Length: 313
Image (cartoon, rainbow, N blue to C red; front, side, top):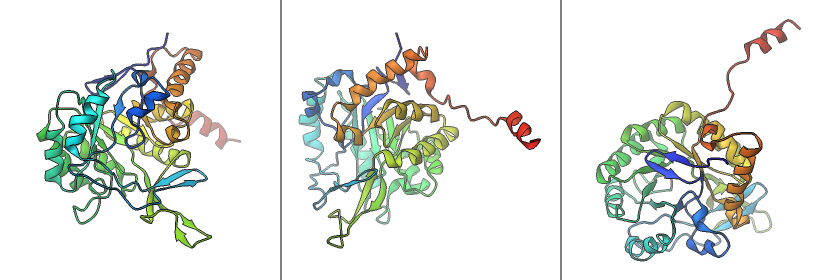
C-alpha cells in the first residue's frame, strides 16, 4: 500500500494531485469524485466583477494551448457567499486564489478571504496588473516581497505564492517570496506568447498575447522548479504541462512536493483521478512506499569516475 499523502507546510494533502486555478470548477464532479483530489483550487477571484478579455480567448497549439481569459469573476462577495459553500461540500482543503491591482488591495483581499472554509490562500501575483507600472508583481523581487509581506501581515492562513515564468530571474523572486513569509511556491503560471493566424494575418487571441500551457512548456518549468528548490526551503508545487504520471514524478524529482494540473483537464476531464491511480501504481511497481520520498530525489551528482574513464579513452 503506497502512502500518497504529502505536506505543504502545515497543510496535509491526501495525495499530490490538484487542479490549477482557472482550469477547474465543482462542475467536474459530474465526471470524477472530487473527494479524491489532494486539494481543490478555485478560480482566481478579484474584489469586483470582471468581464474578462475579448474573444477569442483560447487557441490550440501543436504543443498545448494559448489563452487569454482575463480572470473573469463575479467578485469577492459572490465567492464568499456562493462558491466557498459549494466547495465545502467536498472534503479536500480549499485553496482560494486571489488577484488585485495594488499591494494594498492584495493585503485586504487576503484578509477578506481568511474565513472558515478557506484553508489556503494562493496569491496570483503572476498575472498582468496595473501596478506597479502596469507590470507584474512576480517580475521583480522587490515588488514580490512588498506585496507578499503585506499579505503575510494580513492573514494567518497558509500563503502560496504563484510565480511567473516570464521573470528574468525566477530564483530571485522565489527567494523574495520566502523572505516575505510565503509558506509555499507555485511554479509556475503560463508563459507569455503570441500566435498569428496565417489565413487572416490576425492574432489568434482577441487580447493579442496569451499564456502558453501544455506539454511543450514542461521542461522549462521543471528546470525552474529544480532551480527554486535548490534556493529555498519552503515547499514547491509544480505546474505546467502535466499529462501523464511520468510528468508528476519528474516534477517531484526536481523538487516539487505536489503538482497542479490544468491543460490535461481541458483535454480529458478525468485526467486528475487517472494521475492519482497511475502514481500509486507507478510507486507500487518500484517498491516506493511513500510518494513524498520522490521530492528532490533527482540523482544530479557529478559522476567523476565516468568523466575520468572517458578522459583516458
